[in-house]
Image 1 (cartoon, rainbow, N blue to C red):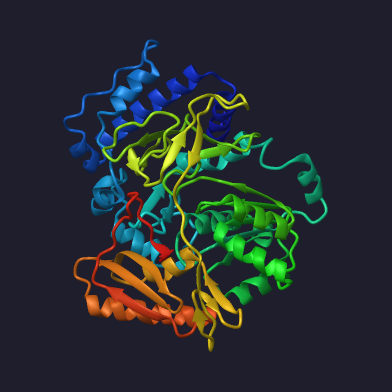
Image 2 (image 1 turned 30 degrees about the vertical axis):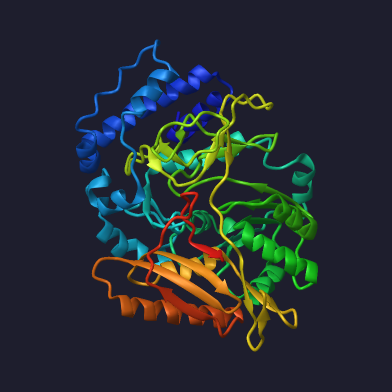
Length: 478
């Protein structure tokens, strides 16, 4: 049996098995991951020097035993991991400097494998701290197989599947391009593997001015949309106004929270069903959606721990302060009790669909769509006097700031109809005046391209900080 077939068979069996079988998989994979981290990662060797070995395999082991053991492992976060990147990875041939030089600094290599085997993605810093994530072959295989196997009967209704037969698949990825973000990397990786996929799957950058994006989508006529829900809300308005003329059969939202009213707007305007995915660059196949429309943690390959602000477990049914995630598939860059930053809630009881996997509700990860006056106009209380405004996506604006040299973390707050206040945290050695000038120039060019000339960009001496809920938001309107 090939490696791919073996993993696929195990995923299928786990979905039809018992809770005990899932617990055994978690226990065995956690023990192997911790042993790998201790032996091959200098960072984890130091971190775990006082942590006892995991109890050997035993039929008597229980979920309680596993939870007790994992609670002895200290949580980790993006900042400390990135500061120890070269000691964190288990392949000594991988260094952060080498990754940047040979892959990350070259946009033409987005979606290609590093050293012929590793998939590399960068985060957009939705929790305020960008990271570089390296996925080995097993992690890639698990991510590519979990969705098709677990959602083979739920992703698309029979009626939708029949509707695809005539136009076929033409998928438009509504994401921010120009960097190695997970959505772009996974899309371009698929395009690289097959000329047929390359013709039918394309990235449509949300960084582009909206009229250009609309024109390109009208030419492509996608049957599937996937990506940021805030972009889909914009497209819904363009469709309603008659400028966008597409007829997708399915929309898949991810990367941001999707409010019920926004989902209704998208479905009404685009005439298709919208579904939501909750994934992460750190765990590419964290959840799957069931026929009840609920998200289930793929607990055979991931451990999800909702915790309070002191990293203590919160009971099912209670919304967490944050969530710790352990990716059991990736050995080249172990993520064990990693602080993902989202607020989640595990269901107190089993799902009506009959799945043995725990049900998850997500309460975090969102940003505001900002509105500014169109060039040559004036706004009063957030609305342009002649009714014309320019809307800006939070992830698009955030990417412009984040990709400026010297920026480590940021926050951008719309403080008025024609003003944006930016808080910056810089990397050591970066000159404040030079970075502010660069950010201001890049934002000015961005706003002009969007048709929102005249936005005043102000810089605050206050550093980026979380809000009262403890959630770090990058872009919002005050």
